[in-house]
Image 1 (cartoon, rainbow, N blue to C red):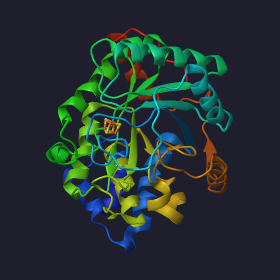
Image 2 (spheres, rainbow, N blue to C red):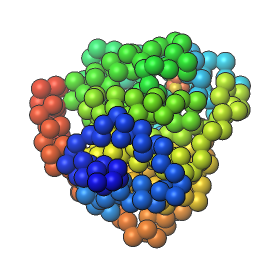
Image 3 (cartoon, protein in one colour):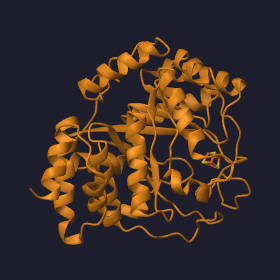
Image 4 (cartoon, protein in one colour):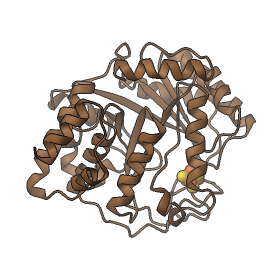
Length: 353
Ligand code: SF4
């Protein structure tokens, strides 16, 4: 049986590929690219049909971070030309979230720069969640940095559905991209969020100079953590950051990376995140055959496609925007999540988890 038939078959059975098989996906030739997309697309359609989940980012706090993540325009000492502001007021954040909800976003991601929240910050976010929920029923994901004990539980109690904290790259090279915290700190926060009853969201950034082995390592590390969603970012080499000259990705490589992540995490929400426009360019529609989730419009400190173009792309592909009443996760994962949450904070899982 060919590699791609084997991988598609395993994906339909929720079995992971071997490490060598995952590496082989990254080593396929451009001649095989459409076959790679088709095989990953079979897995995607099996678990998620033709649905595309839309997510919308609201930046609660931007810039002025004391950490030194080398890929980030908000890092300590960054010369990048980005907005710098401290916490949006709850109503301001709710106004921003409402724009995303009006465009069909099912999840609003509340992002704040910084090492991690203080308890006072968590309360601000709790107020913000309440203000957004008054505007409509939407999943809220918080992305506030490293969590301390009890903070995840407080966010869950305030109505947060998920917590995002990316592993970003492999444990082996983590020290090359950041010196102010380590890989285990990030793993710890993902575990804390899960234990608190939040849906764990964690992903990676490709294009920072990592090897194929590093990409496979981080994809398997995310599988081992049992995350529900995996955002895949492609490095945006911001001027004023140490990785400003790091232009290594091609659209074809981006598709292979997405396919590898899909094969390793077949029944998980794989989300096309930062850098899709500049790296995938005209191949973005092919990526939607592999991922089942995208960020809508502009996100974090970079400009994204206007939401209208995204919606047109989805329609042109014959895909459909996932509705608020349609469960995102396959049934077996929802059942597992309920069990984890009962063991954790005891919070109820929303019907559309
Ligand atoms: S902790 Fe977050 S905001 Fe701060 S430098 Fe790292 S990625 Fe950027």
